[in-house]
Length: 246
Length: 246
DNA sequence: CGTTGAGTTGACCATCGTCAACAGGAGTGG
DNA sequence: CCACTCCTGTTGACGATGGTCAACTCAACG
Image (cartoon, rainbow over all chains, first blue to last red; front, side, top):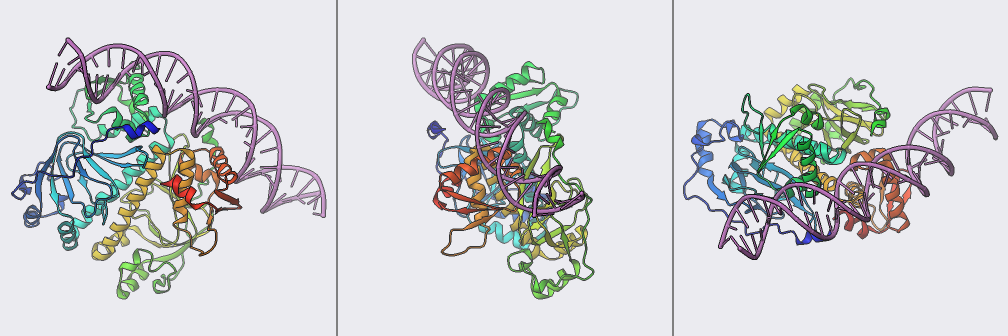
């Protein structure tokens, strides 16, 4: 437990290569799946004026625990990990964000979680107070954000059930199934689950160690439930995984 | 793990001894600390028309996982446990609700959690659709609910950190400190934490077994951090607990 | 072609779970 | 009032799941 101090979690300054021009929301890739879908086209133009496209390199910090009035980011590409650290370096990854997810709805005055790019990531950024003022004027946007928050709460509770009452194998199954639900569907093919995050990330998400994650994936692979591929897993026995996750 | 099936979790019908008359919100004990504080007195009268006071005996079900359009309850007295069950009977208690807490903001169409009275409980109840219509008309109420949801999300994440990355002793410390934060403060005295819930409840909340909960409390007691009292714990070494919870 | 970092595997061990016995209080009935 | 049961909580002995430590492979990269 004490050698965790040594683990090298990248902690660069919080920076963002901010674009000079506002976002073109109407052309946004994640429009329709994200909170912006609550807005009509006039509102969308206004939203675009407030937001700036930005990008992060893999391992770059986006938000730091304790940061005040952290901006809100709407993820448009890449993957982000959300986590909390204990004093002695133990880390709990609370979840991963994918395109369409919003980072920072929950942040009131002070961020309670850190966010870091897992892979190269693009997002559009809203300054905290400007965003707060906008939501105060747009009840439909607020309703959409509230719906998101409730959904996140639901997910956080599933996570708690997994961490509190499931075995290592069940946790892995649950994790894979939950990623499967977010993966693009390829009909007629064995679905492939992309795993852009490291084994350490998976371990810190599931309350395990890298060794246990590795062993459990190997076991599922030996038993024919999955096939391990570089930065991915192919699902061979979906029922087996579903049963583990149930 | 298989004998968990046998465990007797009370599952009576979902009933509520509903009062005939609307609630008198202006006289409410939890007014000021609960979401209703977002409303001015006109709105409060309207809210009162929508709500009905109700009460539950200890161990009585309030909401059942899977229930559709479950009513919203504002807890005014007593303690409630929120939980999810796995198929084989394993239970994860997601949290305990105290007076002023709202049960059911997160519930959209279908409840994803069960709620059960730990002790005799009083609440005021809102039918789901009436409540939804009210929030749609009252942005300030919606904002307050959203704030609550964000706060709950924050709490759920703390819970996940505890379950995923803390030892048994740290979990107990975290649990006691979090209850301490909700207990009435008695200045100049060793604070007493009421524990209306059973050891099984604590275990199911912290991802442990009753035996481990019992042993850990005994250990903390032997070491002078706490004194175990019937249905309560007296805090002798607050720093010790804070350090465990940190 | 050496270095580095991620992932895998094995041997061993500790924390916490399992199983079992027991203590004490509350409720019940003789 | 006492005997009895039931239920909750405590404690002990033992064991299994998953953590620790270490060695090794392999791909990426200079």
